[in-house]
Image (tube, rainbow, N blue to C red; front, side, top):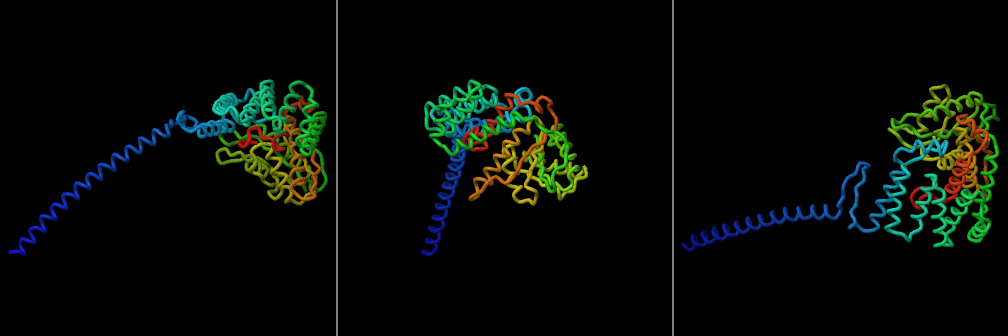
Length: 393
């Protein structure tokens, strides 16, 4: 009897415990659901993101300041590479230069960054650089001047002010140059050499004639942006046809084809390589440089690649006549940087000349003020003064 009573009490206890467990499980489950919903709502509230057509998400003002700045800068760089219609500006202002983005949109994005942080001068310099590209030189100079007034020891801003004010006014300020020498004499000497080379190449007519070179010559062919379908545009095909004639005339010569902006799984270098092979050039004579995204990287990466090749140490840069003067200045500078600075007791290794595909009769004979502006701008960039500090050379 006692044993039956014991078992009965045990069964009742188990039933009670089971009911409590079920209630606890239900409570736990309900709590989990509520917590999950609250978490999703918190995340949605915290991020407050809304997808836009360009693939970015908009951030509300309750995001931390640096997050909003980074977002705006990222979007500005997106427009640098993927922006809208610049063909008119490209044709009329920068002949031979492939512009990378919607400048007006980028100006507005950078203005928003400056509203958030009006103290950091790198952002103002970025805005000024955009105005240079957008042919608003007077506005750019005013911004560079304000940066120099705020930071008199900012060497890079001082160089930018010296160059762009000089181009705007038609003469360079000797007082500003002496200040540059005081801050960094060695680098200022390099700039002086570059400025002199710019003015010298501007006085020269661009050679276009097909001719024979010494044995084992090296040609470097500069690419041009592919179209939206990842195919070569007329400008690049014209350059290739000129290069083909040179290679046929010089059967021992090699050629580096340089250009690495990807479009539809193609690069300029890849398509140039294919085109030359299809037109009878031995594949062993062609070297691809498929990383460069602009003329500065064409120069830096191609000179570095040339150091690995066996050739006569004489290089001819091939491009459109409207573009190739810039090629000469940048390739000579890249040679000095890579072979004259980065190696102990180094010095420039190569004799560099140019040949232009005759795309523009006017620019074959004379250099315009627009070309002069781009020559100076890109010299600053290759010497380490980035258009968009810490973002884009």
